[in-house]
Image 1 (cartoon, rainbow, N blue to C red):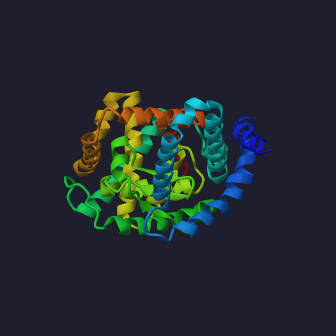
Image 2: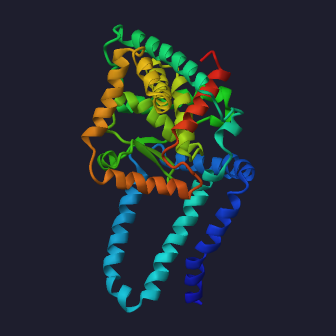
Image 3: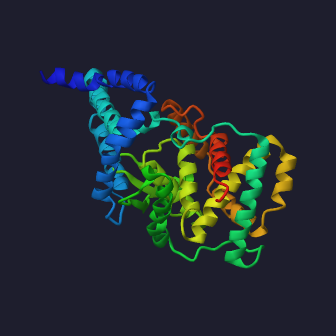
Length: 356
């Protein structure tokens, strides 16, 4: 009977995979019953449980799990060769239970409706619309930059520390939720990861722990990027699993924030994505557009590039490729290369909302 139970748990991963393949065909069902239903309660419950703690329970959880796995592999190394079947069933049981928990606690959100549909935005856009949006964003970024620095050649320096910035993130969602009520964010659970250095070497500025619903920020990134990075991870907490969609929502939360430093970070983020898309379409137009951006803004962009260049290493592409394949396996067909969809959301949003 015990062996039957082990086999049942181990091989339950097969119907789980089949169910995921099936549910992916019904995004409206996922959107209504999971993303706007069960997940809302799961997310809030975990943020209530862990958000008040000043340290990351998720990081500690991963540490303990990692230690346990290494210990288990060491103590069962002989059994792997003597009784491989029993050893493999134990491994498959762990994978099956982890796969189930991962999806129930968060990952069904990969199969919800595309964001442009749920927000009522168009998906397609023209190069002309892209250029118009980029011009508007340039004016907005330059205006905010000048109001902060009083000198168009100086980079923006945040007057807040990491803790103050993370504390202030929900204010952007408070304003944004007046336009989109389902983006209401309470309670909060945003923390710097104790694994910031490994995250940096892997090329990631943050992540959401799906098992504790904590937004984890790489504490080493340039601090002017904190508003958009933290808001991006909050978007994941709210159930937007796709990186491109979390980018857009995080950008919107920063732009809607009452603090102009947050607004600057958000608009600079949006402009950068639009400029990259212009470069892909016409490098000469990109060069012309770049001359219109304040030199201080370009220095902030350079600050970010220099930061990531300092931590480039041979393993970073491996981590990026692994995560890219993970996204593609979870209904994100473009993987990490999804700039055009982010730009489509930005262009169509600003066309529909000329007051921003």
